[in-house]
Length: 265
Image (cartoon, rainbow, N blue to C red; front, side):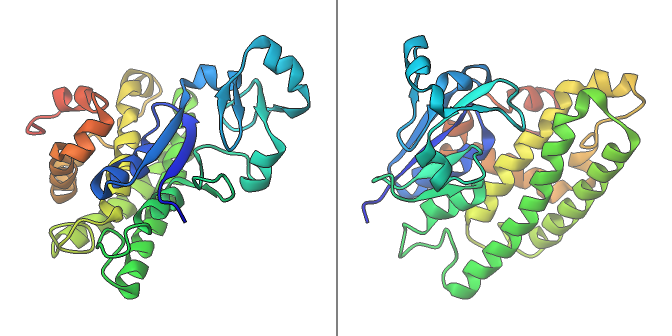
């Protein structure tokens, strides 16, 4: 099968950056299509996504679906899109010929890594690959929790905050423990674990944009003492941010955090 991947999502999206970073490291072609969240309702969600005109929307009225989970307006999802991505979510990725649909950001990341048959980004053998999957599954749980947390930041409550704090501490305790022994998470060589951690945790740090709103409700930032409480994880995030493939992908996304936290640069 021809190498490469087409990805559709709202942009910017740290979850999409996972596959983009891996593709840069492996020199594998990747096409990323999408728009700002507010503009996504003006796109056809399809194996070959495209922006729609008003006339297009009239012609494609049969594809109009009620938006769910993060999108309140109508969305235009083709039957083929829902066949290949049955949960109807983004990011969504497709093989170059559009015959295979892939969903969930870590699976899209794996799809890139698997195309490098002789490399180590997905582990050196099947056992290392399974260890990679173990970390990615743990990362997925953390990612699920912080997605709900970030959606609820403006209407924070004790239950949601406590649940996120426990998930944060559990996840970082594991990352910190692994980094006591290895240069990277799980191994002494870079894998897609590190890519997934970097992108998802960078997105979680967005809670910092809502610091004042949290304070008015009696809450502090969960990540407020991240550098002190989890120094190895903090340094790992910092060092990854300096690598060309990471830095060129995220652009200025973490600049606010670099200014806020000492010793990041």
